[in-house]
Amino acid sequence: MRNDGTLDRRAVVAELLRDPDDLLVVSGLGSATYDVGAAGDRPLNFYLWGAMGGAAMIGLGLALAQPHRRVLVLTGDGEMLMGMGALASIAAAGAPNLAVAVLDNARFGETGAQWSHTGYTTDLAAVAAACGWRATAVAHDMAEVAALRPRLRTEPLFAVLRISPAEVPRHLPPRDGAYLTDRFRRALGVAED
Amino acid sequence: MTPPSWQAAVYAALKAARVTQIGYVPDAGHAHVIAAAHADPDMHAVVLTTEEEGIALAAGAWLGGERAALLMQSSGVGNCINMLSLPVNCRMPFLTLVTMRGEWGEFNPWQVPMGTATPGVLTAAGVHVRRADRPEEVAETVSAAAALAFDSAVPVAVLFSQRLIGTKVFVK
Image 1 (cartoon, rainbow over the protein chains, first blue to last red):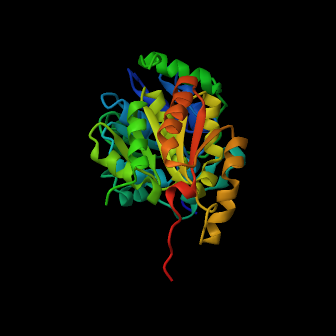
Image 2 (image 1 turned 45 degrees about the vertical axis):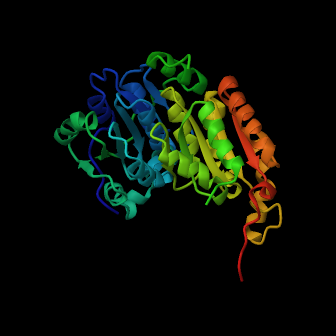
Image 3 (image 1 turned 90 degrees about the vertical axis):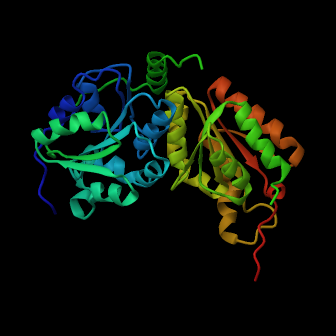
């Protein structure tokens, strides 16, 4: 097993989403959704509570539909691993306004903190690079996280945040999918399309 | 090679329905639509590694104010089941066009179980299922399915029968 990450997941997400402006945010199910909600609920956050493996591809569809806006997908290592093929599909499609950030604690945190593949052998940033992502990064401390914040809003970047496996208090944002969808589309001004 | 006219009608129907993103796992029965999508500067054609990616892609498109469709083969329907909770739960439109295998003169026995299960599996997951068996009904069926999906915000699948597509020929 590799060494555990040390970053506080809530501090990481709070920093990445500081002054979000009109950033379009998609969060993967489980702790990433709680972290994004804890950073401040807003209509342009789309929280997944299911559809495991789908977060990055939702980001792609959104980025293609809104080429003049920035899209940030925040998800966990388990969710990214389930949809790892999306890293190939996104690279092949090309979406300059889409970034993906993985909160990697090398655990399936919702189900008893079992080791995930990133705790055994898998390097997600290397996977993304091999799929054709030209910009990848790994952050180990808050200075590196702060440096990633502007890059995640300007580059088609795949970033891994090495967070601590420590549990944090649950924060439960809205979970009604129809409500979240309608709220997001209205905030974006596309609800009547 | 000139595509069958029903395949050209499929692309025209998707354009008329204002679809601007097409995710696909290839099938010979979708070949013309895939080629047309790549040749169209107003269409995003997205090749997928597995079919459920296309459901998530369509959800993102809808969040962003665009309309998407997923092209796949019946074998891919089995890969989609849990991801179908996304459009159902979020009351989003979802349109998929499915070329059928395993039902009409099939040579490959591995295609038969999922081909047989496809309508039932989709229905069980909350998807409205329509079917086109003859070339002349394809355009109307796709148009009506798109209207149902995008106007009523429900998931809809159109099954293109293997008889329509033509049985894949395996040369021994």
